[in-house]
Image (cartoon, rainbow, N blue to C red; front, side, top):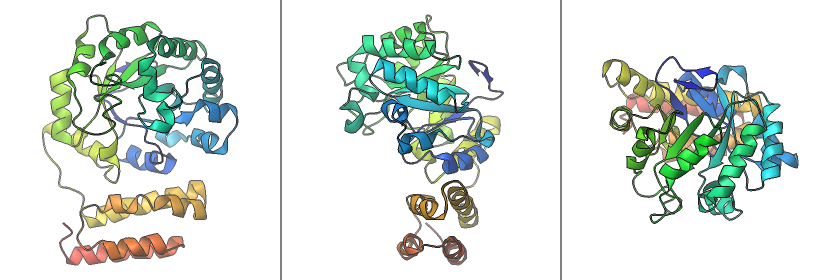
Length: 329
């Protein structure tokens, strides 16, 4: 499968862009575990053109994580064009447009999934971004705004006609947010529409290898995008890859493996963000790595209260030693 000039030798597994999660340190961990294509956290076009630090810092890429996409969002055509030009200077492998974020602070400004209520403008913005860069442009969106307006089959054709090179569809409406179950039937309709000739990537509720294979086979999508299931469990990519290859389900990572990857994540975080910020931003990840472990709360308190890197590494060793003597779940 190809997206623009990006060739994937195997069936592609992608890491979804997640705000405040898929920063550079986390992406490096997911890449190590087998993610084929990743994206930055979504970046505000208005923030980029105003040189806002929070937006600009998200443009940092390193060669180890390639191929990489920069995802931008916005509702103003001129701002999106300028943001595309700025993002291209960071030398990503593609530009992705977010037409799927359901949160109020984004949709309230007419961006993200709100574009599903203004399809002509969505198409105009997409065409403008495509024309503003020589990089491949992709789009991520949802089924529609709500249950009464699931318009993705028609919208997909219109998006393709703008010149995008791939389309990712999350199997929920904006009204659902992340509740309920993702509906893949319309994703399958888009993929099987004879007018569609660009890759279609499915997203939503890919929670493990067996579900991944079922969605791949049932709906025929060209790739899978995994989001929340990878948070605290980046092994999902390598597990799905192994299951696709030989049908075997690997054992879940033990506490030693979890501690080792958590350490790597911490060290990436302080390397790229500095000790103070790197330590602070890592705190949101600790519980995810040890989700479901009995009696973990005292360790969490220690991790959250420790302000030195060496101290956190020592607590992680304590965790490893404790749960090697006791059963984690």
